[in-house]
Image 1 (cartoon, helix red, strand yellow):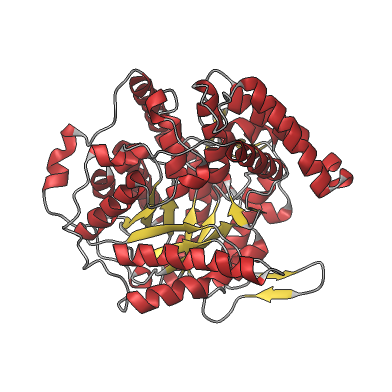
Image 2: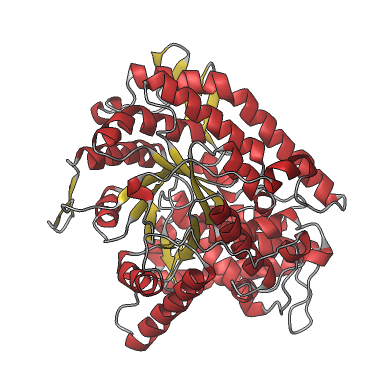
Length: 530
């Protein structure tokens, strides 16, 4: 790889085109260097603490609400007042930072667009830097795109409020070294976006707003808050300008919602039910325990007690602190050429959004512009105000037992095959640079692939029984992978299969589903191949 040092101690290990150089300026990379030198050591400490907690859980301990922060949970306090352009967030659309996607999402009619450097973005160097270019151009109002067919895309007069999701604390940016070490993907994504756009956003009457993923402890939120305080001072931006919504998408984070809001109270924009990663986290954290064996992925629905409890606790917690409680993702996408199947999919979206608005959520997520009107219609009917933070849900009382209740149900051969098939398709696409993939009429990102492979790993670990009585073994998984690869080859054709990355995806996926030790994140293991 090419190696270029632009700022002292900051080295770029990939191509810098003239367009990339507008993002990777000496001033911006100097800022990245300062972020890394100040915060990388603390990040490493927090990741080491995760390992200690996992060891304790594997040894029989179960998570609970922290005793040392009981005072924070007990006393009355609220986060900073909500910025005007974040008061009404009833429909949020999410997607990767690809140029056409950015334009379509901002034009979709949603209140908010969450531009994603994380689970729906394969973190290739090209995707990450061009994503920064795309967001800069969108904020400047100059973004445009012409498709290979000649169709032109441009911003509408009214667009969604922009939020950005950087990568989680566990991920690195291997193409950017600070003092010889790869820097945090979180700090890289945040730093470049904030440095180039904060003042432009403020001049337009909005601000640098973020979604923060996959936190497992309130001290990880404190780290983000420290980053925000430093970044605002460094760039001459008033304190409190940054606002961040935290995705509660780990089981450990669910026990620390108040504490996470407290740590970010001057920069908070609430919490979100990141439900797919939450299910993955539940399986992962308790994967070594036979008493936490999970049924087919399709049976782990939001009406299950452990998930409905998490939803209600999040709503109650956020509203008590006068901030938004955001609902989760509708993964369905419109189905062309099949009216009945399309209507069935859209009805699932309606029922999901109806459940959320009646529970007290202030808004929800969709993955496709075609779902924005459906979600909006439900929230418009049942939420006549910009939000429903006034619905305090004081009737809700959630205990640790509620959050840890394991759902029951069968494990079937069909469930095993679906996990393997979907995971292979997703990982193959991710390895080719596409992290947002429509598979069987659902928009899949890394979270759903993580659920699939974590389930299979857990089933193999405990020799779980299929509905027909067979044990799920390493050998059965290997055989099933071969069979599902054959089906995919027949479905996609020889050329697409051969020219793709299915063999590599199968090799990696098999390792992650059958190895003695659980790989913490699929994206971390596969990152070296993109």
